[in-house]
Length: 251
Image (cartoon, rainbow, N blue to C red; front, top):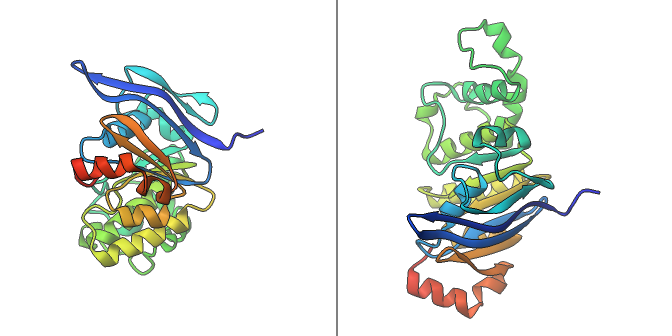
């Protein structure tokens, strides 16, 4: 029987020259939920995120994904298990069209190399699936647009489309609203909600109104430790959380 939990962290700890950036963190992320990781500046959010996505190796602790211990699994193999990370700084090919960007990601999903020199016919077999993904993220009509000509918000949407092309079971979003206009924040918020159906999303996000509107569960970190967990209302009214934000500035 499949567990309700898709990912767990147990006693996750990482030290840099004796400094514990993440200190004994336990996480339990439910399948098909949106889980936010927040906290004041310097709380260890990004470091924790890097541990979960295998960009850092923990000093101690265990990471479980779908019941499997992936603590020692290299970052290069994580995507094959169904975990894909979307970066804070847009990671797209600026000199390729919107359609071509998604097509590259679909080639990667099929285990093929980025064969830009292959015949047009060979590459066009990905076009139908690519167009569906572009429709999913609201980029209909932008297929032929060069990626570097998109607005910043639409670049973020394209990045999410290329991430979805890898068909992740769990999507990790690193500050998806960073640098967006108010209109783009609203657009990407709706997009995240839409793509969360039948997927699990873990996000690090500074915009607390976005966290409030999207999250099923929230983990608050402070000084590398879990300070509080629960719904937005529960953590927002926690005296320890209020004190941490007042003393440390917004996440």
